[in-house]
Length: 195
Figure 1 (cartoon, rainbow, N blue to C red):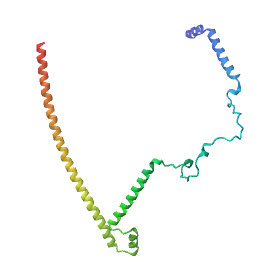
Figure 2 (cartoon, rainbow, N blue to C red):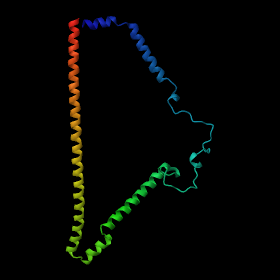
Figure 3 (cartoon, rainbow, N blue to C red):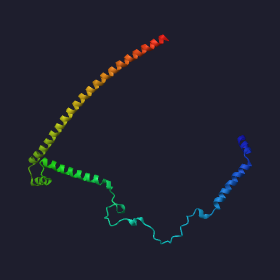
Figure 4 (cartoon, rainbow, N blue to C red):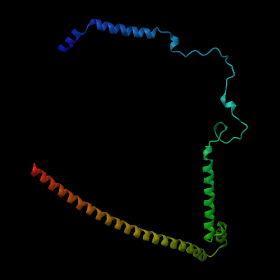
């Protein structure tokens, strides 16, 4: 309670009156201000309401064919046309390669398989053709595994040789470091005896 009383004694009426008058002045200044300040800015009256204005979109050359993009322009970057041509050429090459692969495997056409199935090519013959394809694929897989295993063994031999060389170098460095440390310790002991 004593603190409140001392605070009220320290409170000066002049400070309170100043704050009250400043607040009152601020409220009155905002309330009695011109109403047009916060309103919309005045529109220019120099131009009639139906005046013709410049439209930059009207200056586009519309005689060019529509290319599918915004504002009669193509959405494709002109610098990408070479890449687009290269992608189409690559797709055609892959298509031709797939066709050659189909022809090399003995497949005349997909229509032939449909015709064989509808005409009732014997099941045994179809299984035999399928078995030949699977056998060829298995042979290719076996060759790939054999080559991969051989390469793995070669890599293992190279890694082992590299590890042996690295270990030898590490041992040489360790012995050299030990020798250097012994020499320095002997020199330090000699210097200590001299001092």
